[in-house]
Figure 1: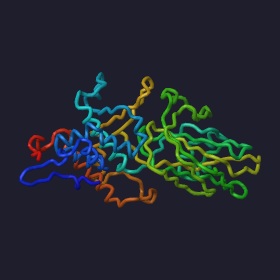
Figure 2: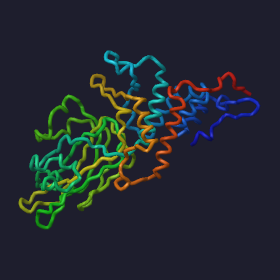
Figure 3: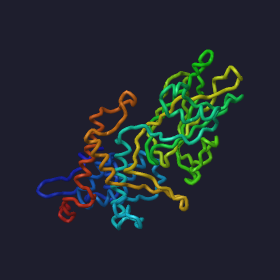
Length: 379
C-alpha cells in the first residue's frame, strides 16, 4: 500500500481522518504501509501520526516481518561523535522510540536496496582436508582454475562411506549482512583418468555467530580442526541437489536471509565419486561464492556473551555516505554478467535515491513543518 492513498482531506479546514477513528483502526491503516520511506512520510504528517508510527514501532515491525532473523536484536544504539569519544560508552539522552524508528527505517532500506557484492572474507575451517595446505579450503576463494601451475581446489579426506558429510565454514565480510544466493563449483580432476568430478549429492547452508568470540583466535585451518561446534547456527536452508558438472552452480535462497554474526557454513551431503587409486569417496570444491548486501559500516551487530543479548549499532553518517554514493552512481555493485538483475537498474537506484531525499528532508527525524494536532477540526 502506498502513502499516496493516505492523505489529509483539505477543504475549508484541514481534517485528519485518522483522528476520527478508534486508535486500533488508525494503527491498522498505518500498518498496511510496506515501505520504510512511506512510514517516514507518515510520521511527518502530524504529531498524532508520528506517535502512532513510533510508539508502536512500525518500522521495526516492517523489518521483522520481512526479515524474521532480526528478532534476536534486543536494543538499538545510534552511533554519534559523542559515543565514539573514549570514555563515553552511551549515547546522549533522546527519544529512544525516535532512534529505533529511524534506525529500523534505514535498516529496511539498506537490506532491500544496498548494492550486491561478494560477501565471503576468509575461510575458517574444513571438516577434513586431504593434503594441507595444497588442497586447503583457502583455494576455494580464488575463481581461477589453477594457482602457480597447480589445480586450485579443496579436497576432503577419503571415506568408505558414500553418505559421509563434510562442512566448510567461512567468515563473511561483515557481522551483519543479507545473503541472497550461494554459489558452488565442484572440482573436476583433469589430471586423473576419465576426468572425474568430485561433487557432493546435495548441499545445505547455515548462518550464525560464534558461541564465544575468544575461541576464534585459534587457527582451525593450520591445526586441521573442525570448528562446527564453535558456532550457533540461527538459520538453516533447505537441501539443494548438486549437479555432477564442472561449472559454477547457483543456489538462490527462498528468501533473502539476514546473517547476524557473520559466519556461513556449507554442508556437503553425500558423495558420488570414488578415486580410482584407493577406492575411497571424495568431495572436492573448486570455488565458493556468497552474494548479498554488506551493511557495514552503516550497521553492525554487537554481541554480549554475559547477557546473551544482541545490539544493533546504527551509524547515520555512514548510512548517508552510502546513500549519496549510490545516488551518484558509485554503488560498487557486481557486474550484471555475474548477478541476475531482477529490477531495472534505474528503478532500483531510483528507489534508494528517493528514500535518501526523504531522509535529507528530515535529517533528525523530529523537526517537521506540520500542522499542530489542535489545529485540525474534529467534526
